Length: 341
Image (tube, rainbow, N blue to C red; front, side, top):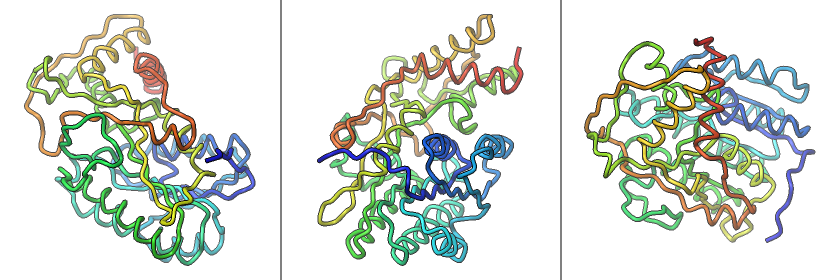
């Protein structure tokens, strides 16, 4: 299949535009001259200042329109589609987090199920050229076979968050089948980077260090059988998404699911040591976290490891940023942003 470059004449709707990936994707498309409509409810699941900071960086772009709203509000969504007539939709708005889904399940049903249903309905009544939506590596559950491939069995989600993402894939498939909506679901693998989500482990570890608190590592202190994670730098994720936007699948049912990960899993402890070194470099002094080892938490998966062959086949791209490079960029940003010494 011939790969088509990004079409800058199209109108792009990005939900979750004040979020981590949504912000970087919006910025990339705006830098290329695209018209971007962003929607976000700016909820307080994590520090809203970070969300406003991201939006501030998008404000100077003339082709950026921001709407504060919730995708679970069908009236707002239908109105946006009717008024702005987006050609391509990227649904990144979702209630994120595996552990939080145990404490607050309602938020996941409202945002991830009802919200996504509204997006699908809007695409049904206002046809779009491509709907790209966020799924998650968590759909693989405790899959033992690695690397994870898109054809693997994913009927055993270990958290409600994972179950909602699997539901999104099923809903999108059905809508694609019934209404011929070209759709691509992206299974993201542990995304990290500057201006990232404070609820992610690497960010939380850094916060705790500066507060003088120990970090908790859920691997029983077993370095031999440590947790493996496919850490993916945000620029790589955004590059992959951007390449896919003008390249929907042309199958009979125009729906597909693709992994988007680093294809190079790292031991959690290696990641932590690399983060300590990156912070040491940023501060000009030795940084060492105080560590407490605990058993694996409910809903956590022992290993995530993406096969990215299908992504490479579709758009000729695979993520390349090493954790050394990516974590250094995060550490430099963190130290400057929070004015740490």
